Image 1 (cartoon, rainbow, N blue to C red):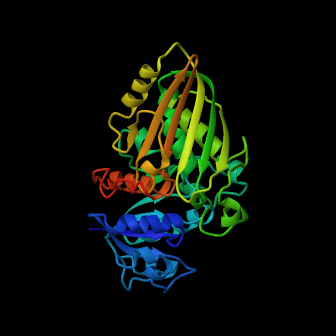
Image 2: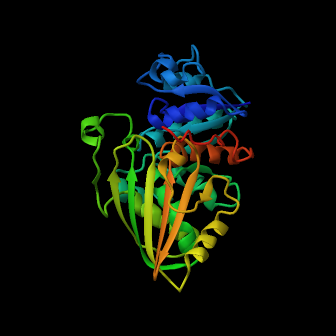
Image 3: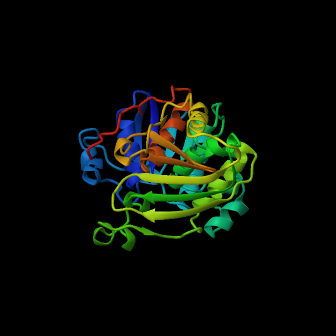
Length: 350
């Protein structure tokens, strides 16, 4: 068994990572790190995980590092907030190097999604705390990188994941030209565990509204990853929406076709692009959230009308968009079959 540690373990993404680790055949939890809940049992914070982690308590950052065994193997997941994650990861990597720990890191925050500190500062408005580590991280979705990287990984954001899964085949194949017009709806868990006005139940229930039109910080991330993978510059015009549900993202990408293409032909383009992707399925008709929520699967639907293409994708923002995608990467970093611990189907009637 490979020891697994989760930094920022009391957030929604941290809770999902704990759930996935509990049933993973190759990873065993060594520490769930949370300074705010250190000493409390995991089951007190996440009652649904009580049977998996009886008498297991959260650790603070100092305790778990002191227990790091010399010469051990460690799968380190970080679900800490943006800005705080990089410093925590840097401290863990420094301690691990001093103790000859074989460590692989997957970070779900935004701290390692850009290859330069200036790009990060331009988007997030703060200086990167550990710019010297940026070249040790790769940011991409597992479906868009064929080889297992020797790097550590910064996982793309949840909206970015849903958009990229829909858009990448269109751009990579040259099937579309010009801008991508994107509309996306996310559940309230995408805003994190700390209560906010926009996620307060009386405001969110039976409601739907747009926010940050053309100004969401995942846009430059998506454009950057499209450019890096396809070598094409693509403008993304994105309008995100808050939906009246807890989990899931539904994204619609619209673009002008580069050449006359039938719906069947475009569907084949997308299907061929993801032919070897276990967790991406091109469905008949339109994809639906309940078919993927609480799973690591993405469903994609395709439509064509005249000169225009529509590609829709649905994911669970906490699983495929964060913890599940991170687990996919960690499997690959340890040369474990990518699907390990992730093939549970969606419960559907949630």
